[in-house]
Structure formats: structure tokens, C-alpha cells
Image 1 (cartoon, rainbow, N blue to C red):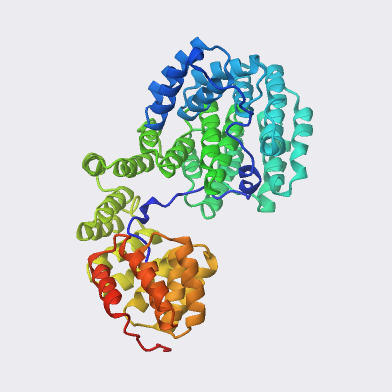
Image 2 (cartoon, one colour):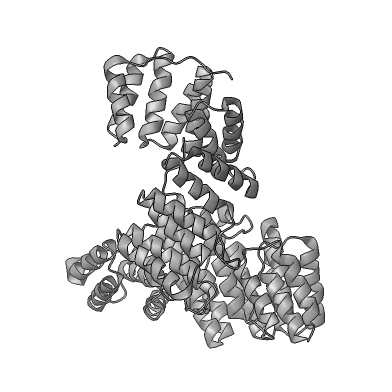
Length: 573
């Protein structure tokens, strides 16, 4: 089955080490056992009003009601924890710290509250208080990664470098965390001014090829630049731009080096280092589907480094994935206009506005930017996405073409813009143009599963290149065995080739994965019919009829429910 047209909601996640499975298994947002609930005598009305305001997306009013409820029932753990979680989620740190302190005073050890208190002590320079607060930030995720790193940087901030290394050694118990142990050891040496040792540590990291982001490269380059070794810094940046071509941090560092300006890095301060790790974990948790937990870590990063635009972009994406576009807008609008990530934030704002059914504002946002700043491939491609989402395929194809033809410093050249233009051409019945773009997308991103599936299914749908289409779809299915659309394509090509036994297996699985898709249910009905399971076939067709099929499928389903299926010959080409 071809992908749904609204594929522009793809969620970009940073390329990170595999820590998510360990962290996502823990209840990271809030872990205390709630045993006492508000009663009418303790501000029930305000508590209920706060819950309702939160549920309808009015966090400001919800916090006000929580505060009122707490005035009537000071120390109530239920209200305090809910108020803390809401304040942290919204980035209302003054309120969040107040609630965290009240929880701690009452003896409640909510891990996220304790972590926020620890980070606040770090910012205030009270490293002993930070260590005490970390005692309450417990749980598998905290104990194995976050707390050891926080302890190490507390020691480093206090000038106790060897004690910091001792704290980092806790990371060696988990193989996946050892690269982080080495990276933060290098950062701490750099921060402590032990440049020769830091250089050895950075070189070891680069030689081991275990870095998963460009940030250690930037930190090393910044240290070299401070030493007056600009040529070596430039050589390192150039080498790693080939490995991390989309790293804004690395591109910005290289640009600033050319301007003779020293940028900041993760080794600049304990706050910068820990903000980086919090944002990294937020991205990893989001990629693993633990979206609520990822918000907390993203907010920790913002608390430590409010201007960290990587974190702001990530939080915006997470809120969009949580179907909270208003929250996404609030975050994304804080990215400064002179920030290199401003355009990316603007594009994500347009998607949030679309999710809020404010499509005219989304169009205006993109068009106003183009009018004021000249042609930009990324913004033009986003405008094409908005047109495609609205089924305005002619406008979408035009915008994608302009994105590809944009000035060289901003032109869209990745696989996705060719893929989305191909979809638009396909919808316009311009198959020759569409096919050329699908093939171009595969040239740019070999074995990209969305492209493999869409092209393979399109060939099948046209009765073309059945064997080659089967090969493309099988390659896609190997990469994404739990993708309903791809599993449907696999079952459908098996059906067309007469392999009904495997077609039934895969189409049944496709329906399990995507039960609300009318096309997949229709396909399963067809294969049931040809294997003699006619009652089940009619059930699937009836179910597909209830799932709002398009006009063409609607007519076909009605015909099959009356007359059954005219069985086509198996195509074994």
C-alpha cells in the first residue's frame, strides 16, 4: 500500500546510542505512590478545575487552580505532584521549583522533582546541596546514567576532577554508556583546563569512531581554536562535516571559526554538558515512543541552557507528536531569529498550525518568510508539504520544484523532496515524472523503505514490473516488519502472484497493524474470497465500507458486496 499523503509529520530524531530501551522502561515522569486524594474540604473544586483546564489545553489556568487548591490544602501530595508535573512540562520553572521544594519538605521523593532541585543547586553553585538532592533522584534510568553524570559534573564544578572521574566510572557497568563515559571525561579535562590530557582524550574518542553526535568534535575544535590552532580545528571540522552533514552545531562552529569567533561547546560548563545529555536522552526517549518522559528531560535541558535551540526544536517535535500543537507553538516561537535553527523552527510551527486547523496561518507564515528573506529551499519544500496535505497537488509539485531549484546554499537536495514531489505527480496522473522522482529518491537514499514501498506498490497497481516490485517491497518489509502499509504491499503482491497462503498471513497481519485502513481491509477481503472464505470476505468488505473509503473504493466495495469478486488471474511475471 502507498503511504498516506500526510507523511510530512515524520519525526526527526537525533542519531544517538541505544539507551532508550533501558530508560523508557522506567517511570521517569513521576514515581511516587499517591495514596491521599483531595476532598471537598481540601479544595476539590479547584483541583477538578485544574484537571479540566489541563485537559482542554489551558495550562496557565490549570496552574492557577492548582495553586488555589494548595492554598486550601497545603502539602497535599496528589495536588503537589500533578502541579509539579504540569509546571515542568510547560517550562514554568519558578512554579516547578516551588512545588518540588514542597514535595521534598513533605518527605516525598519524586525523582524528577529531586533532579530539578539538584540542577537548581548546580546553577546556584551549591554543589553539596546538589549531591544531597541527587540522593532522591533514583530509579533504573537515573541510577545507571543520569545521576552518575550529574554527580561527576558536581565534582568537576567543585574542582574535584579525580572524584569526577570516579563518579563517571559507574557508567562502565553498561556497555552502551561507555562512549558517554569517555566523552564526558574529555569534557571534564577540557573544562578543568587540562588541555594536553583533554587533547589525548578527544583524539582517542575520534580514533575509536564511537561518537554518535558532532558535539565532541565541536568541543575539541573549540579547545584547539582557543590555543591558536585554527588550522587543525578547521581540518577536524571539515572531516566530520562529511560524517555529520546535517549537524547545525558543527556547521555553526565551522562558520564561526572562519569569522574568527570562538563558539561555545558542551565542555564550556557543567550546565552546558548536562543540558546536552538531557536533550540527548529526550531525543532517544522520544524515538522509543516514551514521549511524556522525553518532555521532562527536554525541560531539564532548557532549565540548564534556555537558549539551546536543539532542545527547543526537539520539544516542539515532541509536543506535535503528543498532539499538543499549541504547546509546540509556545516552544518553537522562542527560537531567536538570528539562530541557525530559526528556519527549522518556523517550518515546524507551520505543521503545528496545520494540526490546529489554522492552515491559512500556516501558509502565511511560510509565504511571509519567503517574501522577506528570498527563496529558501527548506521553506519552499515545507510550503509544498502544506499544499500536499491539502490535496493541492499541482501547487505542491510547483513548490517542490522551486525547492530543488533554489539557490545553492538552501536548495532542497535530499531524497524526501523528490519523494514528495513524486507523490504529487502521481496524484496528478503524471506517472512518468513521478517514477523518475521515485528512482531519484532511491539514488539519493538507497533502500529507503518508504520509497521502496511506494514505488513497488505503484508498479503493482499498474501491473508493471511485478517481480521487481516484489523485490522492492520485500526489501522494505525487511527493514520495517511492523509497518502496516508495507506489510499490506507485501501481501498484495503475493496475492497477485497467486501465493494465497502467504498473502492471507501478511494481509491479516497488516489489518492488525492498521485496523482502520479501508484499503487494507479491502485487500484482506479479496484474498479471503479467492481462498473460499466468502463470509469472512464480505465481513472485511463491509468493514472497509464503514471506514470512509474514497469514492473509487466505495463503488468497488458496494459492487463486491452485491456480486462478489471476479477473480483475476495470478500474475507470475
